[in-house]
Length: 68
Image 1: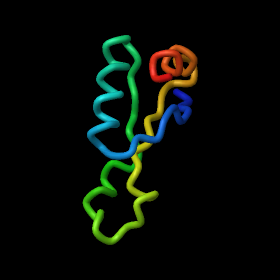
Image 2 (image 1 turned 60 degrees about the horizontal axis):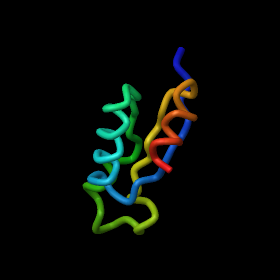
Image 3 (image 1 turned 45 degrees about the vertical axis):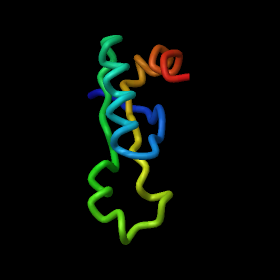
């Protein structure tokens, strides 16, 4: 079973997809968590709207080098 680790909290789905695309160019697959919450944006506090990018723990260091 693949273990995932949180790499980054994007401010919105657009930022999350941009980072996901950059990581994919480096053969690092990501999962997004929280993106569907943007539907209720008018009723949620701003800090709840972020989208978390999760990566395989084995690729975490490589992904961190790219993102930061």
